[in-house]
Length: 494
Image (cartoon, rainbow, N blue to C red; front, side, top):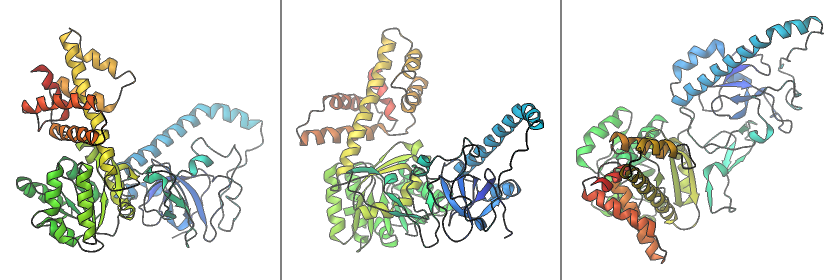
């Protein structure tokens, strides 16, 4: 590749390790960040991610000459967002140039010509050591504090580091910057969200059991990010259509849970309730029959802690490794790869699942202590969410009963302290009579029931959850089980 001559502010395509080329800008490094020894490299800020890294010169290409080429080979959503960010940057830069062109031309006449930006030559070892003056730095150049933030994932220049400081910590905080033998140091921002096309998928074979509302989105994102996935679904009528779809996307089909586990290194499951989770593991041709020493099983279903502890015991008794990792979100968030994962159990399995969790979620948490802690946390979260949804439905119907506009109620609500995407979407769906399931009503009622039972087990009162649970039970009696949780509204109008 021909020698690339670059200077501060140049737009480039940068490639780091096995990651695909990404649009970026050559910027000045922080003054306390030394240039890696060895080959010539430049400090690059990547668009759309706010990541920064030292990139070797042979891994850089000028932005404009290679734009069309790169767009053809990268089709991810976040890649397109990054390209859009470059175009927006160029548009703003052009606007600034036009706004100041007259003043600049006048001032240049009576002033000594400004010193041009220095082009970094190959042997210039001091180019980045001292940083640059304030005049050389642009508004989009990285500040030292922002450069020190870290991101989760299997990234060149990072390794896992356990920290006992917190019993509940995001995956984003468990990484340490190191220099590898390549002398290439990667510095990235605190965000574990997957960048389409930028995840290095694990080389472990992945199995997935359960292709419901949540599981289908997870599998789709695992495949998009390059994971090798074998699927199985327990509901016979859904097997053909759903599995065929994923097979077209590159998945393999397992005939039984035992076969999937025996074929894969890490097997995830995501089913509806404790009984389904137990049957999947303990039933005929179940997971347990495929477990061998070293096999990993990850339970993503929202169930009670007792079920989790039982499953952990039987899996580990066969030499398997167990992790619980229930998810907070909805069908839409699952499809978008924006779930929140809450994990507990074998921490080494959690780390082995890093690329998978990045593909399916925006962040993940590991809760220290025994298996069952993630189930407890998720039940509490869903208890709050379910109770809140019932309260919103109650408010909407009370507004109607007292002659108030429900739309005005929603408008006021969405401009106050409780404003959120959740409130807006659920209320709009209610007003439109759209109860297509994004999170089944029967499942949120199940979570409320399990949370109330958990409260009873430690003699802790849950009167709000108990009241909400009764409303959901009423909605189920009105045949709303398979509708969205927002259909709890109908319990108040019948």
